[in-house]
Every structure is written in C-alpha cells, then in structure tokens.
Length: 225
Image (cartoon, rainbow, N blue to C red; front, side):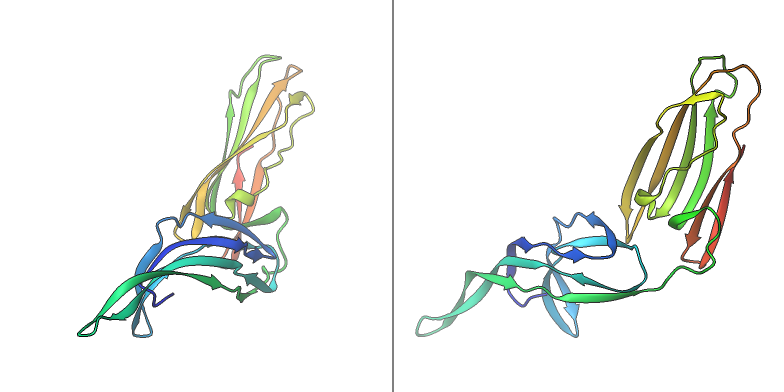
C-alpha cells in the first residue's frame, strides 16, 4: 500500500520463506497500481507475491515476506513564482522484511486407516481397459482423483496387483489450476499390467481417504474391485 502516485516496477532482492508450508505460486503480473480504500483512505496497491499455502504441520508457523526494491513515482511541488505546479519524480523504495504468524490446528485424531494427508474435497474412480485380455497383452489400470485441495501433493494409490501380472512403474499426471484461493484439478495414476498366466484374477477394491475441512470429517471413497 502506498501514497505514491504510481509504482513503476519492483524486484525481489531476498525471497520470502515459508517454513512448514508447501506453496503454489499465483501469477500476479497484472496486479500493479490498483486503487483500494483502506480505513477511509485511498491507496495505490501492488501485489508483490501471492501464494496458496499448504501447512505440513500444526502449531504456530511463521512466514517471512522477503525484501523488495520498488521504483515509484511521486509528485513533487514546484514553485514558479506566481503558481505552484507538480512534476512527477521517480525514486527507489526499499521494503524491509516483515513476518506474519499463522496458527495451524492439527487434524482430528484418530486418523482412519489409509489416510495419507489428503485434505480438501475430492472424488475417486478407477478404470481398467480392457478387463478381458490375452497372455502378454497389456491392460491399463487408472485411478482418477478429482477435486480441490492439496491435490498436487497426493500420493499415488497402491493397488494390490496379483503376482500373475507383470507391472511397470506407474505414471502419475497432475492437471491443476488455481481457482480463487485453492488449487483444483485432477490426478491420474496409470498402471500398465501384463498377464503372464491364464485364469481369472481379482484386483481388490482401492480406498482413498481424505479430510474435508468444510465438514471437519474424514471421508473414505472406494473404487470397485
């Protein structure tokens, strides 16, 4: 927030620190020189950095803003004898770091079996294609998690694959976007399976457990066997 006429540019000289957090940085390139009313006065504002933060532990966590150098324009009063005019003058401003603390409450205990720190609101499904195949023919087993929360930091489901199948290292793809103050998207984990024996085999149902902060409850979702 500033009373200067305009903010021309800024440069980070010391990065902020987010100890105890994972962060998702939000693009703020177009966020210079907005006008905002604060406590009854108008200020020129600039968003220097914006992040969505995901705490990794409970307790009092501290964020340090880092240092920034700004180029600003102020109006300087000039007297020409009979009248006073204002001319724009550019100057540098050095912003010193400040800290802010956030109190993070722990997740409720006891935590259900299968909970792996997923927090948000999600859906869960699986796909097997094809479900009938020949020996040596590959099948694709996909697990799809969609929703809003710490989706970029979820761990891949680990199904119990029958030993009669050769399996390859799974591939996980995250398709996410920033939506308001959250991250929304889809996580797709694909297993490639190749049967080595003839018969009928079962891949057990897979569970996905997450904590919903809106309802303050754990939710367990199942994909079919």
